[in-house]
Image (tube, rainbow, N blue to C red):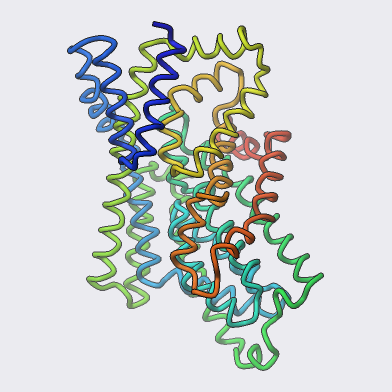
Length: 441
C-alpha cells in the first residue's frame, strides 16, 4: 500500500469525521490509533499511551495555563477596561480617534492574553457600544474589532505560537520575537486605513464633541493613563525578565499570572467570582489544548513511521514538478480553507505532521513559516461564511448589527491582512530581523 494512498485515506477520514461534529481531539486520536492498529497490528496500539508521556515531558506546556489565566484575570476583574477608557480619553479629539484607540486596545490585550477570544469579548462588550453611541459607522467599527482581536494569536505571548514551537521543535522565544514585527505592521495598516477613511469621510468616525472633552480634566487624564498602563507594565516586566535571562519561559508565565492577580487585588476587584470564572475558563482552554496535542502526537507518530513526508515531497517535486513556492502557497491556501471550519490549534495539529517537515526540506525557514501560518489563521478567522470571529461577533454584538453588516465589515481588513502576508513573504526580515538581533539565530 503506497504512502500517498495512506496519506489520502488518513486525512480524508479525519475531515469526514470532523464534519460529523465530533470533537477534534477525538477524531485525530481515533484516526491515528486506528491507522496504527490497521498497519502494524496490536503492539502499535500503545502509540497513544507513548504520546501521553511525550506531552507530560514537555515542560514548556505549563506556560499555557499561566498565560491564559493572566488574560482572563485581567479581563474578568475589569483591569483591562481601564485600557479602553485611557484610549477613549486620549484619542477622542481626533477624527476616528476612538476606532484608533480600539486598535491600540486590541494590540495591548493581545500582548496580555495570547488568544483572540479575550480581545473580541472586551472589544464587543466595552468598545463597540461606546463607538456606536458616539456616532461611528457600525460596519467600520465591527471590522476594527474583529480584525484587531485576531492579533491575539500573533503578538507575544501568543499561546498558538507556543504550541507551534512545541510541535515544530522550534524555540518559543524566536517565534514570539518573529511575531512582533508582523503584528505591529498589521496594527499600523489597520490604523492608517481607519485614519485615512475617517479623514475622507468624517461622518464615519466623528471626534468627541468639544463639551464632552472639556468635562475631562488634565488630572483625570493622567489618572486614566496610570490605570491604563498597569496592564502594560505587567507585560513588560514579564517579558523583560524572560528576555534578560532572569527567569525561564515557565517562570515568566507564572510571574505574569501572579502580577495579573495582584493588579486585580490592587484595583479592588479580586473576589471569589473573578477567581472562579478565571480558573474555570483557564481549565477549559488548557484541557482542550492538551487533548488536541496528545491526539496530534499519536497521529504524527503513525505518519512519521510510514515515511510519508518523503513520499509526498517526491510526489509534489518529482512527479508533479511543483516549485517550492507553489507548494508553500498551496499550504497557506489550505489553512484559509480549513480555518473556515476549524480553530487554529486544530488546523496546526492536523497538518503539522506533513507541512512542517516538508517546509524544512524545501529550504524554508520554519520560524518564518510559523508566522505565515499564524497570519493565514487570522485571515481564516474573519473569512465568510464560517470564520470563527464572525460568529463570536454575531453572538456578542447588539441587535442593530446584522450578520450582513459583519460580513461587509471585514472586506477591507482581509485585504490589508493579505497585503501584510505578501509583504512578509517578499521581505522575510520583517519577521526574522528581531529574532536574529536578540538570539543570533
